[in-house]
Amino acid sequence: MKGGFIGVDVFFVISGFLISTIIFEALDRGTFSFTAFYARRIRRIFPALILVLVVSYALGWFLLLVDEYKQLGKHIAAGTGFISNFVMWRETGYFDNSAETKPLLHLWSLGVEEQFYIVWPLLLWLAWKWKFNLLTITVIVAIVSFYLNLNGVSKDPVATFYSPQTRFWELLCGSLLAWASIYKKDAPADIKKKVVGWVGYDIYRHIPEVNGKIRDNVFSWFGLFLLAYGFCHINEHIPFPGQWAIVPVLGSVSIISAGANAWVNRNLLSNKVAVWFGLISFPLYLWHWPLLSFVKIIESESPSRAIRIAIGVLSIVLAWLTYNFLERPIRLQGSSKANVALLVLTTLFIGIVGFLTYKNHGISPRSTSLIKGGERKLLKYDFIVASHPNYIEQMTADRQVAIRAPYCQFNNPDQTFDAYRLGISDCLKIVSDKKNVLIIGDSHAADLYVALKETHHHLNLLQVTGAGCMAIRSRYRDKDDPCRRLIDYGIEFAKKNKLDYVLLASRWPNDFSGLVLELDALKEAGQRVILMGPPVEFKKDVNKFLSRRSGDDGLVRLSPRFINREKITLNERMAEFAKKNNVPFVDRISLFCDIQRVCNLVADNGELYIWDYGHLSRTGAKYLGERLLERDYFR
Image (tube, rainbow, N blue to C red):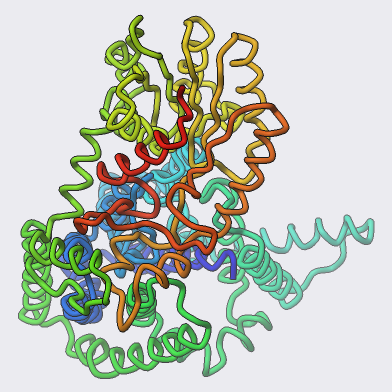
């Protein structure tokens, strides 16, 4: 399902409803205890979580590469501290590993929930003690959180997705429902009756008599419709949560408020199969994603449908075993302080092990896929990886120096455009005894700076590049967007200065029609423009699929298997576009790959040309520069 991820929002509403009900009732009785509350949460969450983290760590030892195992260690530490959402938030960016290859990615939602249950019980207890209105407190916090969600989703969608303050309103909708069900037992029924009556009036032009059964059924079916709509129509391309999160939240609230007598709730959600899945739902949530992620890592591409189904079945079996033989027995033992203390200490120990694994670079040296192919280059690459466990990290750091980050290459998420511009004068110095070439675009344009600097010594290279900043201003509707300001700056500089060439390069989008505006602006300024096609791109990081190759897999078989063919089609379309607009076009893909899509990935000395999905190492940049020099694009 495209919108399968909105299950998290359903989970938040249910969690807010159940836990807030417990807190409200305990406060009313005067029996609320922070110790008892958190002991109950520990017995509920820690047993299954400990098991999944230990198994993930063990699987990672045998299946992951050093850098992947290092990241897993960090995610284990974050999972035990319930801060996974903050860690994932910081990692998500232009150079981040794909989400599917993070076995503990799903713990971000558990982090948000537990952060809520650190803040919310304390706030309710203080409000109750000082005799503040609990409803008022809940409504105010929910409104503020919802506002932050709406305001943030367009400005920083990643932060809005992972931040607790932009997600709390979803849990609080469940809390409001809990408050109404306890303190205003008739209020939900009265509201539902009025809503159904209004709908009936729109249809029949009179307010029909609405009994409780019709009212509850209307709400439960309406909620089910909203969830079905969300699962089918919300997708990863829609800014989320934002206003779209109302769909699963309102759907969940409607179904819960309908009560046990509604047909949907009584027959669909209360049947034995649904209840059984409900019982194992928490361990099922914990197990399913690591298994799918490890399989994707091993396969180095999306696993087949049969494998995914098998993983789903295995997840259910493991969840049932976890519930029956671990989770349920511990919960039935009661509130033993010794058991709670043991669970906390075990979790703390696992977190420390994860953190030490991260700090020790994945506990290297470890297995680095020493299955050798028959090719000399790959043998040398194997030797480099086995001898230097931090090879990829060192290459990445070297590349940052080579592309002149952070002032010529704008890629620091904490850096403002104004701060970037302060140092840009060193990147835009025109000289009279060389040909001046201005490079504008994203990080792949920055790779071209390195390529030309290594090989084209007759050129003076000027650089205005930024991570993810495609050289098409119309892609950025907000004029204050850092990428929009960066590309504006580069184009305006070109219009005001005499240059020999302006080089536009990016990881171009499928819709690049807006590029014609940049070409026209530069032509009108009298500049000679060269359009660079998209870089050769792979579905998987090159260092990953090379290190995991097996059997007779060599470069001849690997690159055609993992190459992103959509970029090949895009490259052909851009070549036609350049011809139509009378602009020289450089086919970057053909400089690395032949017509059979067999690509040069490893140098004679075993060093990688391309280290991730498509960015160049310094060695790869020099190789590209030599190919460009052979074709004499910059006469």
